[in-house]
Amino acid sequence: METVFSEPALYKAGKYLTFRVARQDFVLNINCVRGILPVHQLIPIESDYANRIPISGFAAVGGLDFPVIDLRAKLGIPHGSHGREPFIIVVETGGLWSGGRLAGFIADRVSDMLDLRPRDFRNGMLRTHGRPRRVLVPDRIMNEEDWSAFALDLRD
Image 1: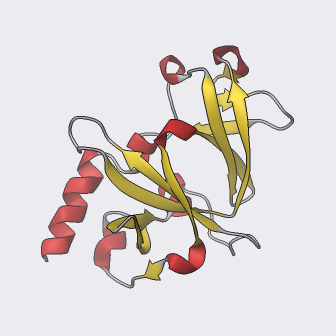
Image 2: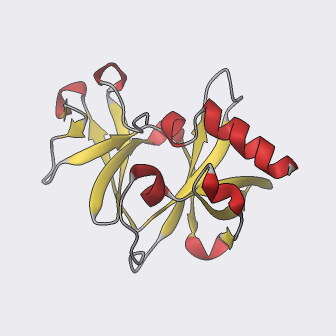
């Protein structure tokens, strides 16, 4: 299974959003973030999507609907209850192949914005400001294969 974390070549200086999923800390380049929504805007679904792609439901931002991915399932993290202040983080995924599609995932807590340098990253982790945080790459949350499977599921 392809990892959803970045390679060292992708560590760039800039602003990063910090958040938590299932008691694990992550960072995400803010240039990929298109919005942060309250979790009550999620429209949950019960379907066969989860057979191919772990989808929690759908939400909308700016009139555009997008899938909300179950990041815990995608990362292989055991399920549990969400934090006291869960949010949907909306990201733009893809480059040329996807045309910049929106996807979201639920974060148990959104913490802070950090201004980082390339030297702050080591071995797939951010090593500054306290505990280590894993670097998340939106293009790996929903890759080309996931979008293709998702389109097939919508047609069924």
